[in-house]
Length: 347
Picture (cartoon, rainbow, N blue to C red):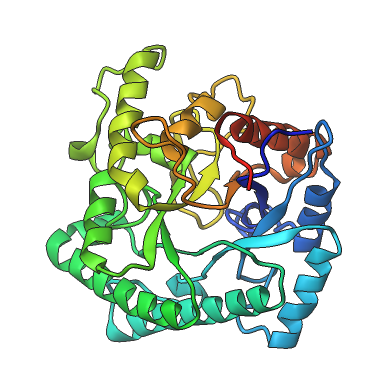
């Protein structure tokens, strides 16, 4: 029996969709991922819940209330709860660039509102005790770099509108730091954009695989933290870099993804290259998962922040063959348990 009951341990549904499709491998259905998640057990510990992607073929963003309640019952029937939700804010699936035309920005906000409505339905149905709605800028770094000042202002304006809508549903928005999103592609641009929004219900969603690339300055070389001649066996230097980055972003962090990265980028399907997700025991993994999670879960004095009630495993763009092995999910849950053992608490 584990000593700690928090943070709750969640799996993610979006690896079954992100990076999949006609120009890659076929998506993996939500029911399949739910079954794998519910079946995992390591030393008597199971996943507590799952975070969801509000996009077909998993969940139609325009689902009716009764359809969402049916989904909730299906998840609850597997003894799981729901946490954070990914809003489909991208132009090719109904959203729009947060710094684009008026129509683009209106569509972005509409997708956020639909996501928040689903989130509220899940909360009201008693299956979603905590979690956020995840967003990004839905634009690429090169387009943003054409006019960083004005484009950051436009993204902030759109996010501000989205925050106001989310507040009506009692939701928080979290911007996930991925190097493939304009105005979010470095730790400095991420902080600048968040500061420009000026709303209490927005924060940062830290993913250990993506944020590792912040240290190397991918897509924003002048913001790199580690030196250009950095070698991965210099663990002390890596920890100093992690401390600097998390000191800037931790105060904003309201949602957290446990992950592994080998220091490289990867993209599949239509997804741009971003921080590569590796399996927790990948021999090329650069992170000490449990230890390095502490940079996000504890403050500069080593005290737990308890800023979020659950943590989620994120492993996008794994091959379907890997994702359909039960051992994959056993290893992932074991990594999640190790994080909670070092940085958990009870309530």
